[in-house]
Length: 187
Image 1: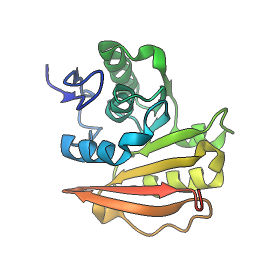
Image 2: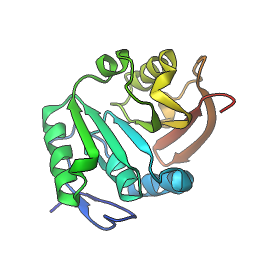
Image 3: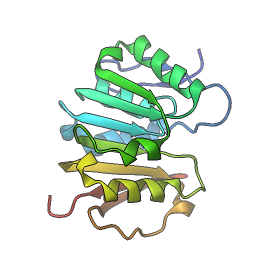
Image 4: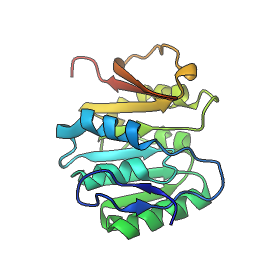
């Protein structure tokens, strides 16, 4: 079965299905492994929000590495079916919530609970990553005080963001993937 794999944790080595068609761009194993190595100690018991979730690979990796729960937001019907199938395949469907909705509609609401880790990986070259950061910045309660927001973009897309509640604290480039890490200042 073609797909991508879970790199570490309780579901290590398990294959995940890809979304049919070419509308999603899963994170490379190298970038995903580096990302989770940077977050290593912070995932145990964490609440994860996977925006523009695609295959669900990042949220599933977080669950495999000890996150307590993950919420997947995706508007594409095929992608939602793929996420649900991937969650069932690795046995994490009880720790997960998959919502078929627009990210910006979802973020307009006040959160019930904040998240420790938020992954933002929208379609490229539309400025959606910056719009998503602005939406999170407008409602900082989405991010727990010690939480991290990671934007996964093409390096050509990067531009400094004027944010009130989030600060860029790190960035890492892996080929055509740039990971930008944002935190709440002083947290």
